[in-house]
Length: 131
Length: 455
Image 1 (tube, rainbow over the protein chains, first blue to last red):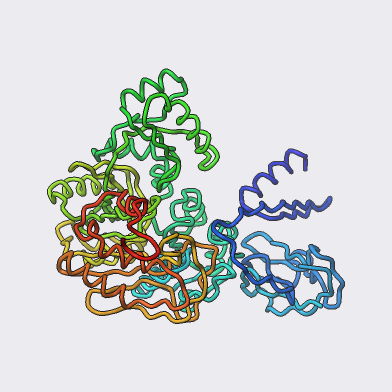
Image 2: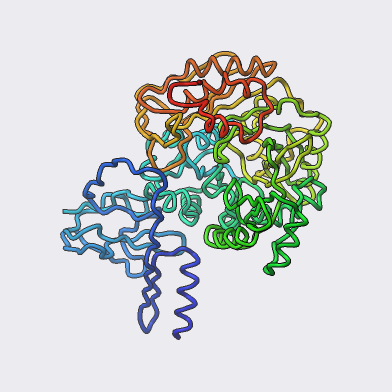
């Protein structure tokens, strides 16, 4: 794979609105992650909104089918009791032919999966317990 | 053919779409932001899924996520409602590319009508009367701009090709201001619409806003469903609409209506749509086409007896229109008041909790609303919370019924513009009918409408 190939892949992935892309080949793995665009400030007056509670678990970053194991390795992405850092990929959502990583919302210890394997989940659905 | 429709919207229109789907035996999927989980249509839908946080850009404007939600839930079609992605040609194209049905016109038609210069050209070719103007993009050369301005005549409007709905336009009253106005509008349009092209149109001083509702199927049939008068506006936001438009020559309306239906056939338009016109001194001038179902569509439903959303879905299913032009008969008069969660006299948005919601009723009254007692109107979206509609055999009867409904409606705990509507229903200009689009602004500027009521 050349640098040009990577640029082409990156552009295609950006056009498709992907947040990240992982490509495994015999000679290695390519991981691309895209910085999220900053959403525009909401129009209208600002009213007091309760501060979001500290999530009790690991929320889904969007819609997808929750996978207990990585489809290519068959192994769980994380195991209960594992210490993780904020932003670390702790799970996967299947979105059509692709995968969407689930980041840990904070530093902590991952618990059990609370959603069935391959269940359809939406933004914010709690996928794992977390201490 | 699809059996499940994903509703890519919120509020009253999402509920309206859900009801039309249910009547047709279609299943529904509600997609919502995380602050909208308590919306009425989310509770009623066969399936619901959260697609993102409160911010529209991360939820209702996130086309990729919505298409993904449709694929994952097995929805074969997406109804975009109005606002949000309803007139986004790229979104419609992505729905088409995913092998799903976009309940609306083909993406190519949205794209063409979204470019106001291309739309105007298409309308002129179809014989639809347009505001005299530059008939194309204003050139770069200063002298050419001045010549063009002199040709159009002053005062004139400089408008962005990518604008619409009152955005991206500037009035130029004399030739000295023209070059600067063109440069500023170009610069703003480039930033706001990613299209710096501008065009010129003659400025009409006291026009009415009259629009023609159309339906066109995939088999080459198109009908027009009468007109609506939407002249009661503030800052290009309509607040009261009615049908038919008072005092118009029916022969002129019919000729324009026929031209609109013909234009649908010419440009290959399908679905529901609205041709918006300015009307002055007995003449119609096309301004833009809305390629979606509009907020005020129920006004037309009341006078025609049709279900426009249902027709829209059936057109998307490939079915022929359920009626011919001869079947379209207008009966009586209908009025819509848009109830917004906003201060009635300062117009500042007023989100909050509706402690008790008691909608009005009785003969000739229709309410389209997602409100229920205890519902919290979030601050993140459009402030429309209810559409109050009245229908009567005559305009006077429709006005009387609306006044009654406005005296009944109760939104305890929530500030709305109902007091403004109560004032307007008794205002001499409204009662007479036929006022222009600056009427409400003049009432406000003249101090006629203020906190204490009419002076």
